[in-house]
Image (cartoon, rainbow, N blue to C red; front, side, top):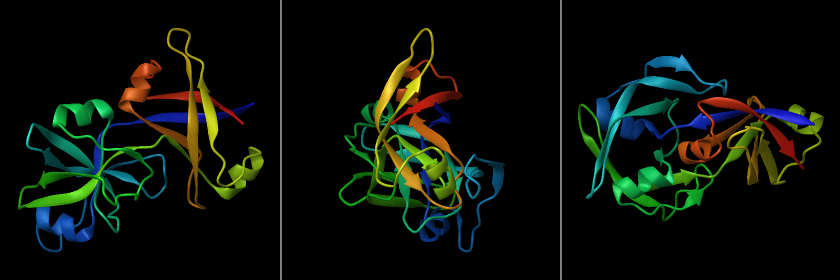
Length: 190
């Protein structure tokens, strides 16, 4: 039986350097508030406002480091509140995705695309992939053994990079459905 850490990923924003500077000022660098489970990722001190024609979310955390393209990750419940209909996608699959306005202390950015509901996925390195008996490109299921609300997440993508630590990421809607408050342990089903 293969066990894996399951983490809840709340709404957040990844920024390109260009958009970071538009929102916070020329030459701006993110300040690390705390490290996240993936070695290079961190929750930044900084936050932004997500605005649509219908509603606004204030104080949305930025996750660093900067990326090649700005990406907003929200749940379906968040999308409904904002009046958006983004599709479930893999990270960085942004072509034709939903739009919004991001507002920072020094400016704003109108994203014509970049808002997604992130597809549930497992971060894993090649060594752990082999150790767990998994293979690249394989979709797996993960069982949550919660007595009150246990369930099985199907069609979980594997995202493989040398720097990754094994952990599954789900959004807040998925975590709520499984009765998960923050983190738990899941069982990978091949």
